[in-house]
Image (cartoon, rainbow, N blue to C red; front, side, top):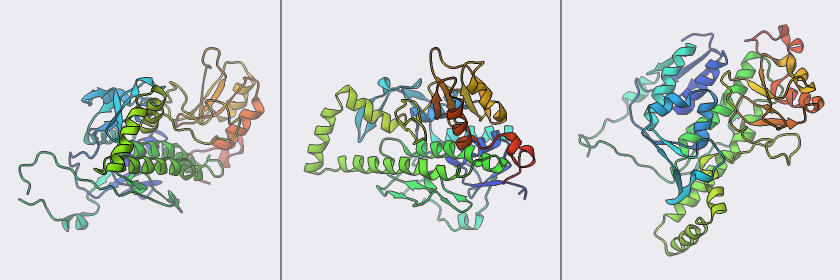
Length: 371
């Protein structure tokens, strides 16, 4: 393995592979290590939720994934109770039916574009000690088992070790959220880790990974525990389930729970005007193919001028028709919204999320020089 690797990812599941793609896109020297000598072809998950579809589309990766998918599913469920995704505020109001193995295959193949290696069989001794399958099982074509265990790491970052996906949280598979939660961890972490590796990260940026994603994980653990209770053959649980089923026939209740399960209601806390409807939320329909952030503002304007000295980290585009200027992080979340002449507010957000201007970086902002 190249000793010049800046980031080493343990695990070639969907979370690790998406993180490797994000770092590769950003030019960070990365390697993935995996204890299994080859992909098993097995799948613990069978779907991508709407927010994960948005994440892949943000990088131009959704279309090739759809080519490998089996179906688009217009609904989700909460403890088996149907949720209509049609009312969600997203361009993808459906689940993508695709086995986890196909997602992993695509993401690993895509790493070749960045020269990121996946080093397999790195724990062969441990693998050799694992017992093989009994002779209660040669004819089985598909089998899975799970528990209702719910565990979450107290900290997602300890020193130079960062946890994401199953390493950070485990829960029952109720609602089909696990794979999606991990991939969204990776999407939040990747651009921040890349900024640290390049040397242009503002102070405290990497700490926002835990601050933003730990509450999201805790919420998923809570809703999966609730779903498991509702599936118990207990008279009290049955009564609660019947009541919830009735509530979910109302459009607002259905939309709210569907947004939670699909991940489309995630809104990170952001400094600034807290009551702005977009601050901290997903930027609607914004694609960030470069992996950089974006300032969406009409030129010429004071905000466009204010962002010019971070052109290595921020792309620029026009504001939506009649819309306010928006600063969007590389993970698609709005970190500033305001008027075209609000240069001071924009500068504060730029410093908070994208670091100092190039002229104030060590060595003039040369890439690959961590501070």
